Length: 282
Image (cartoon, rainbow, N blue to C red; front, top):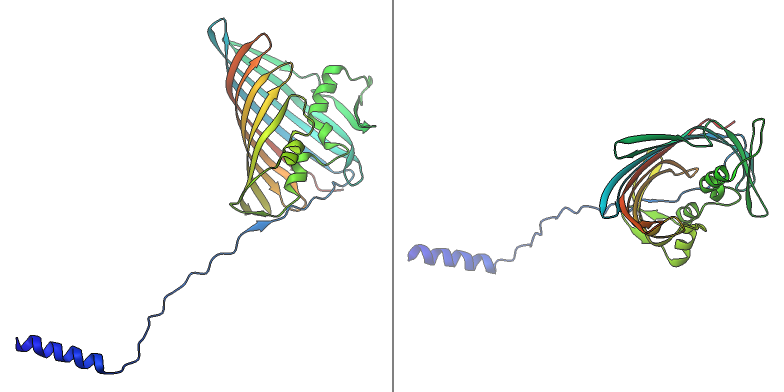
């Protein structure tokens, strides 16, 4: 008991003695600054050349008369694109298809189909809003199939800034912050496509490194054309050079659920990679 009383007196004496209160320092970690980037859109230089390598694989399963039929389609192309006329946007392109072919795998049969544009060089331009093309060889005539393929690939690049480029260069992006496109921007993404419309798209800047910005783009598309009706969900990983803004690599992964002509249902996946190589400006 004496020990307890002594301890109590000692504590009481200590509590009555004025001593400075020392608050231990707490280490604080500064909040890292948000990483932002603004892409700089610069028109290409006349005479500049780029090469685009594209591979695309489609794995589908069709249902024909109650039977499941798997089909795989591999597409490859190598395009050499030279800018012949440029104002604030490209006005005329010279495009050489070094390679363009499709291989279809169906029920054990492999069918290789070179595209009609393979091995040919074209001048492409617009006049009064219409897309034009001529072949630079002995016969400048371009048939309807060639014109469709060329228009699908390049019409959105001539005489205008492509819709997706306008959107990506219109604002400052913050790493990790998702942005949902509004209806007007979805219309720009669709870019007057006749076979489908974007119904939702979210864009997120995921990182910035070595002068490039990497975006994650997720979209939902409604397909509605004479060839296909249905829905498509796509995820695109786009690596873009910041200044001047231009693509380095585009990786696409899509899921499709649709109906082909004749009411044939099909579903499957599509995966593609497109890389860009730029020659030194003249």
